[in-house]
Amino acid sequence: MSDTTPAYYGADAVGPFLTWPLVNEAVESALKAVVKSSPALTAQPRRTFTPIGSQSVQDQGLLLTMPAFVGNYETSSRGGSSTLACKLVTSFSGNAQRQPPLPSILAHVLVFSHQTGQLAAIMEATDLTTRRTVAASLVSTKYLYFRRFGPDAEVTRPITVAIVGCGVQGQMHALAFCQSFRVEKLLLYNRSRAKAEELAKLIGLEVGGQAVEVCESSREACHEADVICVATFAKEPLIHSQDLKPSGGVHINAVGAGEIHFSEVAPSVYRRSKVYVDCYANAEAELVGLPAPITAEVGEVILSKDYPKEQDITVFQSMGMASEDACVAQAVLDAISAGKDKDE
Image 1 (cartoon, helix red, strand yellow):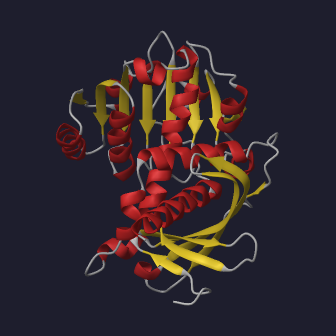
Image 2 (image 1 turned 180 degrees about the vertical axis):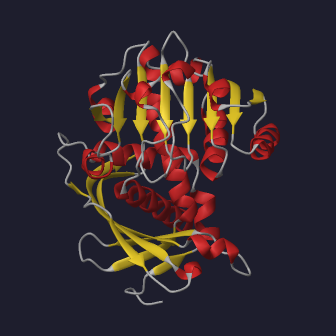
């Protein structure tokens, strides 16, 4: 391989490095880097959507292009470095009906030298995308929920968590929250009960130590939850104001990918809530009609330490950012490189 030939890292090569500490730190770095008041040079243009038409419904799809430059950011393994990357995502809903079946969504991140523009690496990023989405929820929960109770509350404070929607994102959120925080009780709801029951069994096998309940409705799942993670394609609200704890003090991670980003959560909830986003620029483009003003970017809260009050209801409206993908991909490349250096 010549010095100018980009390295390729498939899912098997990337997967072992996608640990929660690594992904969480990278995502937190990205959230801080995009804050408008930050001195970091960061550019992330709006994502582009290229429709792919065909006479065959099975072949119809979409190409999403998500470029980002994250300048002069720091992590525990590197100081004051920059990353230039672009994530490419294809979405072909008919892939599941193919023989053999293929994933409906496939992603790759291209990482470039920010000094020369040369392509340095191509990284399979389907799992990376899933994990960075969950990590954004973990980081937002840490600062928007736990920090309102003190600097170490994410370690000391037990919580009840509701998972609404037990698909891939719901499953990963459930596992990650149980592994990262003191989850005392886990409440699961899915439109088809069987999928929630499967997740309950998985939690028992993978984590254990929590009381896990499968609920008959989203209201039943949410009514005593401190933290709610909702990740569905729902077009109608699943969470209403009357579903929440009467005392308040609730944090919601709204992760769904429906036609409208905020369709899962009812306007009655938004009107009572402080709403936070990962990036204002994305919000301006993709949250048109949001029934509440945006309070701040999560990165602003991290940097300013202006945390919500204990009884506040907060919503993290997660949309995903190219800068998160760039920082996670760079962290994985750094970890791979460090591993090679040790072997040598």
